[in-house]
Image 1: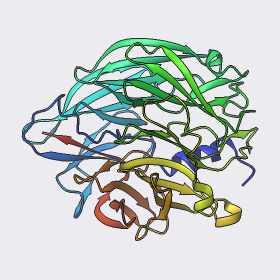
Image 2: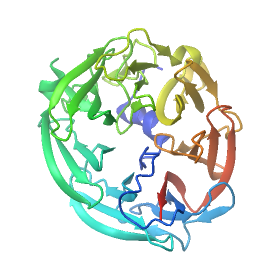
Image 3: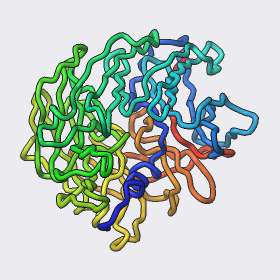
Length: 409
């Protein structure tokens, strides 16, 4: 697996991990919009794939059984590309405007459990969106031309932009290239932003001559002032374009996930393994005593995307080397506390795509709920974090599943 086009690289990272995303917030954040009857509903987004048609928002009380369809059902979104995040019990649908401003539509559930529109406003098209305190932090990151990244704070309760900050990505990188934030994660009272170093020259924008380093920029909040950059060189950058690669566990420690897939001129140039690294609670350094070589334990597979289940267990979407393991895409569970890796069983043999970047957990916190699309159909699966066994649930008809989330009402 040496030769990659930019499109092929992003296909490996994104095509198997639906473009539209939901938040990885597992607390419910029930202090925001909507009513509170103690009940919940699942929000399922699905796309028909038709040109110019965006996702449908479907709701269900239970996703462990039965079926649901987009035909004559759901709330149709306008615009071709949408991505999603839930914060403060509000469901945000953000239009990807291809560089232009796009609509941000907010929904919640009324007392009958019906999905209703709460507000609609315009915002910049962004590449990073994450829940921080009672806000949604969004970041527009340039890949060429001007080097200023713009950060916006959106009040998640009132759906209002309340602040903005900027970062010169060339100044941040300090290596002749520019920093491109892959995501943002609240760690304690700060925001940690992993980034990759890219050329940004308009020809090989996402290529780099610095493939074997890891960077996390640390910002205070809400001021968004840069405090330091955490660096390491045992693996490559954390996460990927539109893909979170840093998560905080219940103990306050942060774990970073690297696919080690940096390229230069469409050639894979990372020499380090796909791996997991750690930042201990209260520190701003990588723990040099911790290194989880996932590529080795998986038999040569690389991390494509990650979502947190609980208690140190993560659901991973892995993709293989076409010359070594047929380029297969598979699901696995990694226990970062014990550094164990287990392939998921009872899952479909062939995945067209999956919502593996951002999912929700079951009420007991032991399992991940994920949408899996296959050539035979599309289903919602529950994957047990202890046994790594997948259980098939609701079938989604009339469209491929792009995100799953849950709201209280």
